[in-house]
Image (cartoon, rainbow, N blue to C red; front, side, top):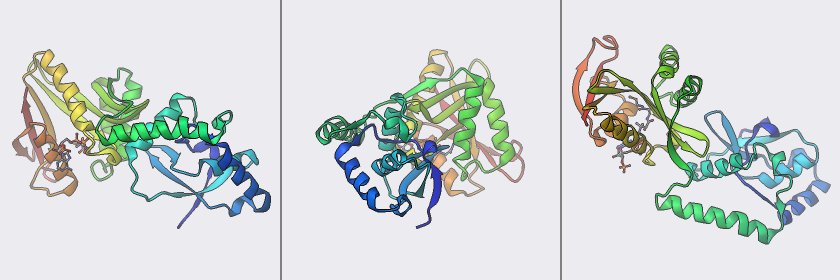
Amino acid sequence: MSTLMMRLSEIQPSQLYISEVKLKKVRTLLEDVDPRSLDPIPVKKIGDTVFFTDGHTRAYALMEQGVDSVHVFWDEDDLDWLQYLVCVSWCEDAGIREIAHLRGRVVDHSTYRRLWHKRCDAMQKETREGHYENVYTRQVEDPVEKSRITERILRALPDWFGIEEAIHEYVREVAEKDFFTINVGDRAVGFVSIHHHNAFTSEIYCMGIYQEVHRRGFGQRLLQEVVSRLEADGKKFLTVKTLGDSFPDPAYARTKQFYQSMGFYPLEESLAIWGAETPCLVMLKPL
Ligand SMILES: CC(C)(COP(=O)(O)OP(=O)(O)OC[C@H]1O[C@@H](n2cnc3c(N)ncnc32)[C@H](O)[C@@H]1OP(=O)(O)O)[C@@H](O)C(=O)NCCC(=O)NCCS
């Protein structure tokens, strides 16, 4: 397992409390061993946020000892990203951005079980049933925020958005277009940007959702939001441009499955739009 050193202040907790009894055990352990000999702590990353998936008690005990940086490793476990993102959003709501912010949240074990385990159990049950706490769509008006969200998400989707100039163009152009996000708490985990061609037709200019939360219905929720607004405005068609079938690509094959399942039909493939190297498929959804 390869490890790296990371500053505690740069790692987002995903837990709201520390159990006193667990903390006492780690404190006792640290009386006899060198802090550097503790097992590395697992972390994951989404966008530019690195968060603990476990090991909060160890991190807290090390912080108490004045340790500034800890050994971490990238957690490869196939965990439920959405559940962790909800936990991270609870922490962010409570102003907990680093392990030091858990000071004052060390509680006895029965309180820990009551406040933390029960809340997590309820949230896990809800997510399994498809009710996602803290997940909502939002229209973003601020051009700077639109560009920032776009850049963060597109850079996390290299299988779809690998061309640097294209990323720059999207980041620049979304600033002036209608823009909606799907959020888990304060964090945008997906966005769609809409260009209006005329009184009848609008286009999905760009859309992306963090890969870690694909197939959770987020793309569908974003499109439902957009479609209901366009229909209220009397629009008749929604179009999208995507990679044509004559350029076989497994990632874009999934994208087209998504659009087809959302009611888009292939209209025509053209080499005139993005150039001869990049066939462009225009798809259309009647509203
Ligand atoms: C395309 C994208 C926006 C879809 O978002 P999503 O949240 O993963 O999609 P949803 O979970 O809402 O999917 C809704 C339905 O679309 C279809 N679908 C979505 N992804 C699919 C896939 N990989 N394979 C087959 N069908 C798929 C399914 O019918 C799905 O319903 P189901 O899960 O109940 O079967 C997202 O995958 C993405 O960001 N892709 C990378 C960037 C991209 O392609 N952007 C568009 C560029 S033109």
